[in-house]
Length: 312
Image 1 (cartoon, rainbow, N blue to C red):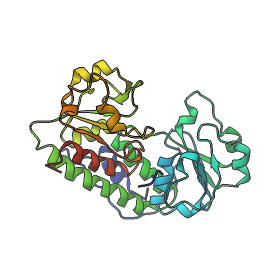
Image 2: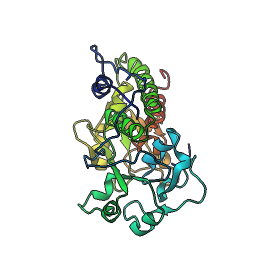
Image 3: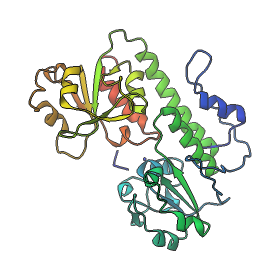
């Protein structure tokens, strides 16, 4: 996969998806029947929005948003995107690219988009670079990166509803749920669970995560344990903490150094760790494990095979 990556539901279907479980705790797919519905009136950040009834020109900011739009069949309607999305398959050739954190509002307006889907990251410091665009009546939709698998389902549903392709969104979510349940069933039967350290930034500034993020959910789904599960969210971590945790398996999705697996295995002081001694250090696709969209299924499968190659 190159670097790149809902639906009319009745009220009952939406509630089922939000619960994401049946009476016995397993995920239950939403229904896929299409019915007439109103467009969303608030974006995923809770802002009031007015989505046009017809959308032919889309600006997509953030690779995760772009991948969802392409999966829903709207790649040909994307007229501009961000610099990190430029290599995603399914985009038109030579479209304008914007700085994801500081988009050029004047240039965006000149493109006359019907709608702009953007990331919530730009609001991190309280500034809204899209205010001039919204003030002239262009619909700007904020999609904060979801931290949970459930949130990803809801994001996909939102996109599909906003584009009047409800059934496509339901189908994507159903396929995700099916695959996750298949792996969860296997993972739940594993008694002797392996421990995992997942590295998302390399030395000297190690970065990983505890509970509360979808990658931790994935580790648990495949039947393993996160060595940093006592922590919350995304965290900086010291080498001493990782060495002391002595994980059975180390996974990295670092893609900004030439050979992240060998770099980990060559670190001074790491040679006696179980994962390093047993050569259980693996790379998984960065985008499939960092973009909160349907591609997490690829990351899930890669992680399952890395941790339990004899089972998955």
